[in-house]
Image (tube, one colour):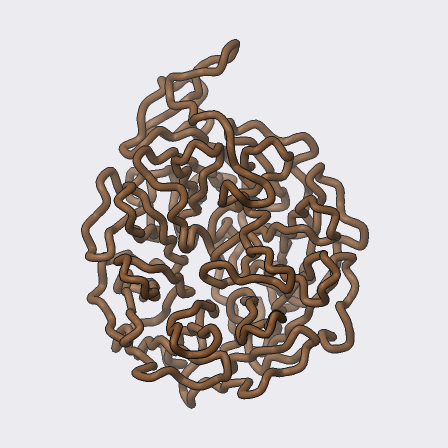
Length: 510
């Protein structure tokens, strides 16, 4: 084991699933890697033709999904990582039928431990692949690949980061000039690059002495009176524990008034930021989990809420969706643990800390490092909610994809429904338009007027069945989880539609 690596852990799936319309049937599919397999299922838990596909490595990070070759059909991009910084990482890009896209897979001679992000930087109609690469001793690089797997151009031929990369890159038109900018983060520096790869004026911004940027960067229009979008970045102490702060910078690299805001005086870590208008006042809030403390909400005046819930050791991202149909966003987070009964926790709270009725959900296994993902998979106006859990007490360990329908939820209120905001992993709140003006969520299937509408039949609840098929199996707390002989039963909040077991190899997580 190389110096600096953190012991023997399972390379379990992290940061949830992706939802996207891959087969063109007006419904969204469920996409998730586990071990060396990448799976695609229908809403009913049936494997889509051509899937699963075998990966050259372990699919720990969630996939990114978008149209790489400009043919109007999305591809699935999956990082397959190794165990050590010196291990080769393989980047896969698959068509909707499971066949590799021309030019893929690609090998990278170092570790990629985050998902990639996708953006059309050269304006050719196909999305490019933005990759953060880590090395040991602590260092890293950032590169962009075209949809055919080749380097995008000399402006993107591997930029040194000066430290370990943090999170996926974020992408948006920061200054409103009609061109995209790329924001990438390392522990040592926050950098903005223009679409051709040159560094934007005012960047990079170095972390303060004794401190490090952490978790990942997010983009949003927090201050409409200030030109451009803002960059939201958490930071931590380089010591074992210390103050956790939130930094917000303008599109030109200037710190915003009243920031940084101190989230906790003594904590070892923090999650990537999520952003949404929690109270309906037209202003965005920033939501994070402070490790060992709980969820905190920060407004644009840098006022930090008291921790909303004590969430064990969680640092997964928080999702912001309307779970109860009241027109306001709720906070959805994992508790990073499993009790003696072998079940984890997926918790939900109003912005004032009131638990949402019917939560926590108790899926089998631990929700460690996962969180939830929400979308209307079948177009009935009701949200489906997913999380991935792992039971490492089994040999080999087993991971589960859990899927619930949430009656009373409001499917059109989705400010931050999954890790890094959307399936392209853009990290930007709202419609972070490309040059064409096409919203980032256009091929995510999250809106009925998107390029691939998510309209379909109503959810099939536990105990119901389509003609000619048996009832959907369900187990304790509504989880099917391959309990084929179990009697269907209702989950505390809605009806669990799907539980799928994924076998994992026992490996350590760096």
